Length: 89
Image (cartoon, rainbow, N blue to C red):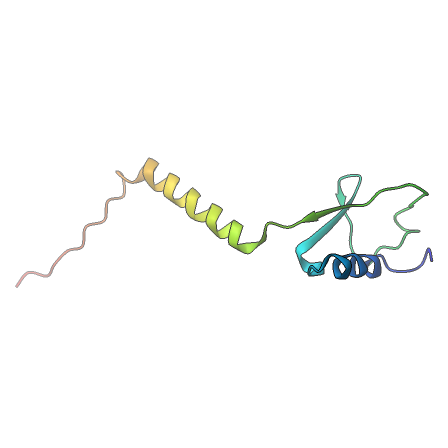
């Protein structure tokens, strides 16, 4: 069991919770765990706990990005006012 890749545990947990394993992050003592690790390489002992966190996803990131852009434009908007020019006829 100490040579089993930890990703097998990640996958089983995700299936039990009805989630995609790609939407989860697993941490040991606050450090992200790679699926390639084994209990032996992680030096897991009895009663060690692995934390699981649900990622916020791309949609959240995009919303945060737009909020940042809006705030940025409020600060510098007066410096970069774009006015379309019409050709002289």
